[in-house]
Length: 377
Image (cartoon, rainbow, N blue to C red; front, top):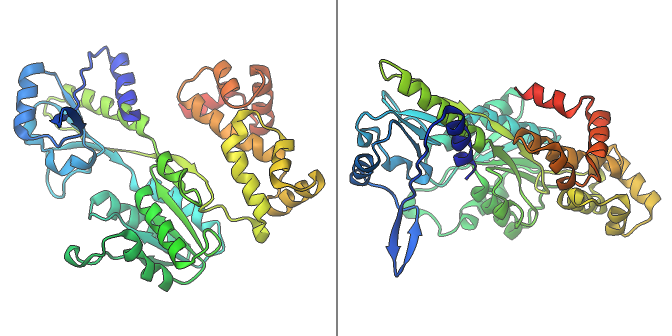
């Protein structure tokens, strides 16, 4: 959906008429979305719509979608790696290096000496590249890297837990684990739970995609690198415009960078392992934008205000209020990047008024919201 919004935004700016097509097939009286398309389907769609150009969001059907099916129509394949070797495919795909950097920075902030990478269950290029880039960064920092190898398909256990458990138990502890995506990270956490490996004390874990229905429903919650899907859609629009204007029909494929990292319990290491502080930090992460103050956080910790403040400073080096504002302002910056009006942002981020938001933003970030937006351009 975010990719579509990015394409839509570019289309409006370019004055394009944008027609979308979703694949579906009848299934017992209903409809099952995301059927893999065939070349014949595409040919019929091209005849029906006669578009000037196409943007194809590939998803997990990427290996089935071929440039030849679009009959030399200017076409950009979104979220698909270019095939190995020579190819006339023009693709917009995620930048593995920027994803790996966010994960590595998060995990390397610990004092761990060992790190590991768990690829996706299928041998996709994006999974290999994330692992290669992460391994480079780990070695560059003088640390050890361990990479999980899946058994042959015919001999694989039925679940990720069965596959991961012996390997996770064999890793030196503590260890920082980077998973190819949130689905794999969830499997790692489940295996850790079954093996009695404490997360994040013995093993910290970071995934990719920030799939909230996965990340927020795991125990502990999963830290995850966000891919900038809206930016990907806009880049796809720009690339298609270049391709339609290119006299020789040749335009280079492009990548889109990661947007950041959402830190949750799976990688948040609290000094002194103070569980009350860890519980409070997670409470703030979930409720800071609801307008909570330090008093609600202290009540959650079930200790005195004085002890709560001392515990926070010892574990994190700042106050409860600092943590609340940090979470709020992180959300503010994300909404500003999406061009949400500041007056709307104030209410959505727990501030009583736009005046209050402007004051806190300037005091804590050293710039106005307008100056921050200018820095993104």
